[in-house]
Amino acid sequence: MHFTPLLTGLFAAGAVAAPAKDLAVRQLGGSTSNELEDGSCKPVIFINARASTEPGNMGLSTGPALCSSLKRALGDVACQGVGGAYSAGLAQNALPGGSSQGAFDEAKRLFNLAHTKCPDSTIVASGYSQGTAVMNGAIKDLDAEVQDQIAGVVLFGYTKNAQNDGQIENFPADKAGHFTYTDDVSPASDFLQQKVQSAGSSSSSSSSDDGSSSSGSGFGSLFG
Image (cartoon, rainbow, N blue to C red; front, side):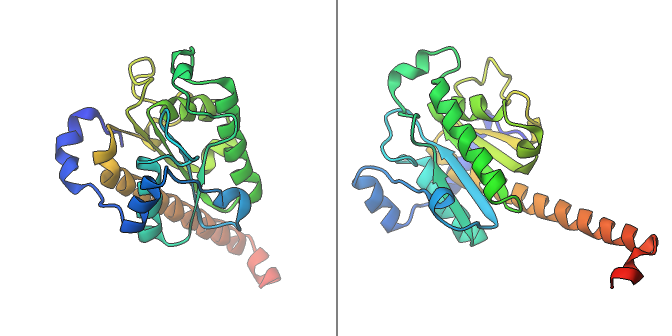
């Protein structure tokens, strides 16, 4: 499923209104969330790379709004912003990859952490403006087993859209949704929710198939 800027007008009316507490956080200078690094594993892990100049590691706009929307819809979601070496400075936009290697490495570290710490969790992710380049630069170089754990990624104002034909390099096209800016938070959240649900259905189906195979081979009676 692939969204383009042409769909903006269709989705703008459905934008999610942020809760009052989220607005208060923004007025105080952005938000920071380290629930993957500091907390316990949740069924869903959301990793976000903010736009240029946005404070905190989640930023001011799409990151906090998506985190809130996913938590309302899915319940147990761990939200994690890309901070560290990713400073979200304006100058880094001019680099060949659209951000710094340090930013890519920091995002990769978080995806790898999600995989090793919480192998049974479903990962979803988002990037806004320069953050979209960070997502592309990180995800394209992840090991296949880590990429497989990522159910979906939404890109707001993809800075590498023309160069990469709207896709994340070396990553399934149907897992990436391209949106414009903050008015598209609602459909972006819906996209990620659908991907999480699909990932859960696929996992359940695989487990069921494995169980049937075991039973058919005679191991089911041996192991109860």
